[in-house]
Amino acid sequence: MSVKQILMAATAATVLATSAVFAEGTGLMAKDAYARAATPNAKAGGVFMMLMNRSDQDDTLIEVRSDVAKRIELHTHIDNGDGIMKMTQIEGGIAVPAGGMHMLERGGDHVMLMGLTRSLVQGETVNLTLVFEEAGEVKIEVPVDNARKGAQSAHSN
Image (tube, rainbow, N blue to C red; front, side, top):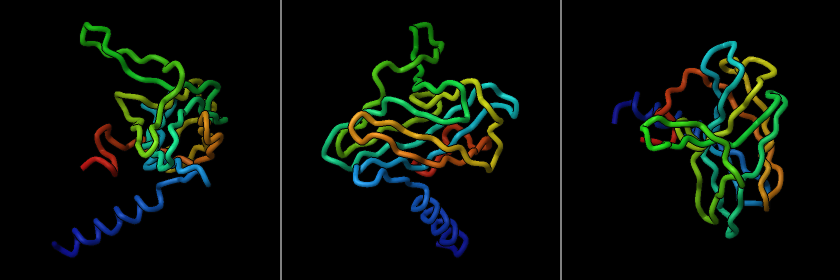
């Protein structure tokens, strides 16, 4: 392994170690979260992350709150059978099984920010409150990363 590869691996490990936010005493965590908008003046944006549940109790993400948008919904993409994907709101929340995880990613389940109250500027952060059915509220700070590609993330290699 070259020095450059070792340094890159060490940097990635540091980022991963600091990008996880635990809900104190619940076993729930949000890992590798980021927010993005398609354009600087977009009216909507998305938030993506890995939800991990290290507890022995199933839980469900039922709501997300933030002052960055007038309305926030949990969304997914479905294929109506014609090969065209349609975004739709998830009814009942997003289940995170005990000892498991649920990926919120582009093209799949995600947090939809509608009616942005400010632009999602590269390098800034967005404060979110994740509301779980059992664990309650979990406050996280999410970096804005408009440059990230859909398949590019710290957990997919």
